[in-house]
Length: 98
Length: 238
Image 1 (spheres, rainbow over the protein chains, first blue to last red):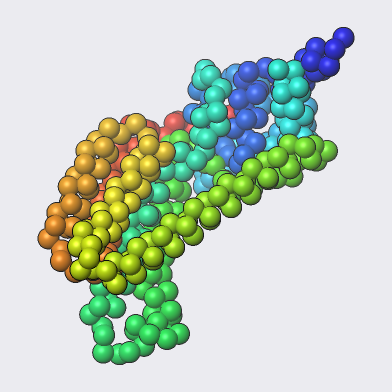
Image 2: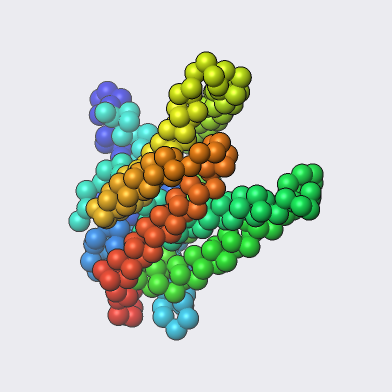
């Protein structure tokens, strides 16, 4: 197997899913954001977004913090250093592959 | 679902001005500069207003008196209207600044950023030196080249129109009326240029005031359009 094919076969499958890739791409350049911002940016429905976030959280790529803004519940999201490293590796792998 | 494109990754930058507060803040900054300039031209008697170290304190005090409230209003507006409607985002140092084990990507990112900063600084210095040389040359050879001050005025006024045009194209959002505002701004600046007979420095006062008012108007228009088209979602478990 050549290097390009190997890079494709070794792509991180957690990140490779388009929905999760969108989430990580949006979280990558910022410090933190809330659930509403991600929902507006990605135009995903709540269920989809929640399930993708849960998957990313279980992989250790995203940190989720439940808090309140006044009396309204707010979900804060930020990318972890592990998520950032994995995202960078994914980008490098894509560049190697193509 | 939106497709991923490079412009999607710039989403957060445009989002910062989705409510028009960015334009309002820039407009307030220009109004502050105009106020300072007018005060300095009016208050010539106390010499400290226009000369020496005290001038700097006066300058910062005037600018802070305008930009401080503008900054506070922007923060309040974001918390009160923008974050509950379309979400909260904290810009600044993102996760990409602490990526470990992939110095390859980081280095390239930082190098490209360094190159961009050096290029911008180099261009600004060159532009500044060219303007100073042009003004100096114009002052010495005013009789020989009578059209030189006009060229300086055109370059100065054109810079504002291009600046606002760039702002609209970059972070203006889907507001077509802003292009009419740009046209209005261009016409207004041409009128100021025709009616004003003094130097570029003297002309900068009405120009700052006019451009500042245009930007504030543009920001207010964007803000009301944002309020009309967005509504806070009902609170539920996320």
